[in-house]
Length: 111
Image (cartoon, rainbow, N blue to C red; front, top):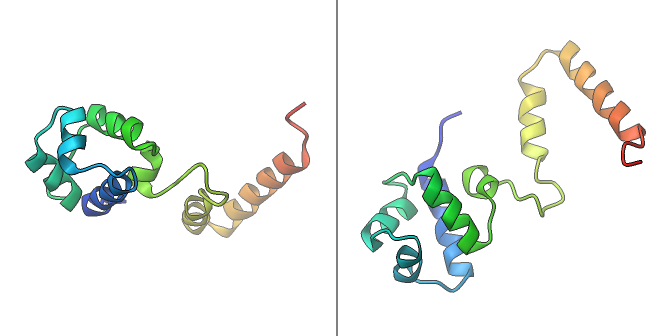
């Protein structure tokens, strides 16, 4: 699966706007130039993991959300991942995955 940096950048921009922050404010907080942040938001530059982690903290979003759109606060945040996983394996493995998942659901593992 290829990383789509323009989608990641778009999510960063949306999260920044949701926090009512300007590019200047956000860039200053993580010690990067406004021009670099602008390129990241357009998908033309890649941000390193340290800066990504800082962005997540400042914007109150998860790394999972920025990288693949998964939000752990959403009820169905793993739907796409499970669907992609199931589609990638044979019918026999699909049945095995289903049976394991069903056994987990039916077992009271919380105590």
